[in-house]
Each structure stands twice: as C-alpha cells, then as structure tokens.
Image (cartoon, rainbow, N blue to C red; front, side, top):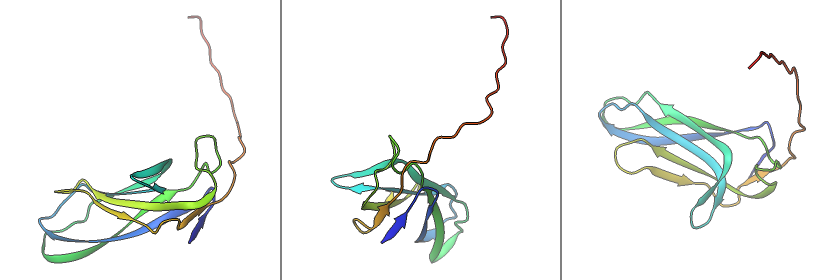
Length: 130
C-alpha cells in the first residue's frame, strides 16, 4: 500500500519489451483513479512521459522508463477525496497496434490530506482609456 499526501509524487517504474525498427513518439501515461467497468480517473492526477530512445532491435529488448504523477488538491472541491480505494493505471500508447494497459492492485493507493490553504500575492493592475 502506498500513502500519498498533497505535494508528493508517485513514480511509476515501467518496463516493456520491443523488437523491430527504431521508434520515436511512444508515450507512457499514468493516472490514479478507481477501476469499475471503466477506469474513472481523478482529474489532474496523471503524468505522461515521451519515450525517445527506442532503438532498432533485432531481438526482443527490455526498456525501463519512469512516469511521475504529481499529487495535489486532495480534499479540494474538484480534487480527490481522501480514502484508501484508489489504484494506478498505466498505458503504453502512440505505438503501432493497440495501446497496452496495466492496472495496479485494487485499493492499493491511499490519499490523505486536506486541500492546501489558499494563498495570494502581488496583484498588479494597469489601466487605460478604452
């Protein structure tokens, strides 16, 4: 179980294998949410990494790439509600063929914390006749 608070980052270490021509533009996309009939992603709790180093591989070769999910707005009006019933979804996308999905164990992510207090600073105004 992973416990996350506002200001944390969830780092997903992803591994996949490739064979064939060099490829540019593949992406890893990761999100936190709840899996039901579909995956209900929490707005704003996601991350993407563009994969640029896929070589021309004549045999299956392993690749390891990280994708980070910044954690913020737990407890906010439009953010995630604190609780222990979340999981991670990662997909390898923008590749030939179908996207490849991975779903983490159910209820493995706990979100804790309250919305950060609002802060404001340095209001600057200019004006002119319209």
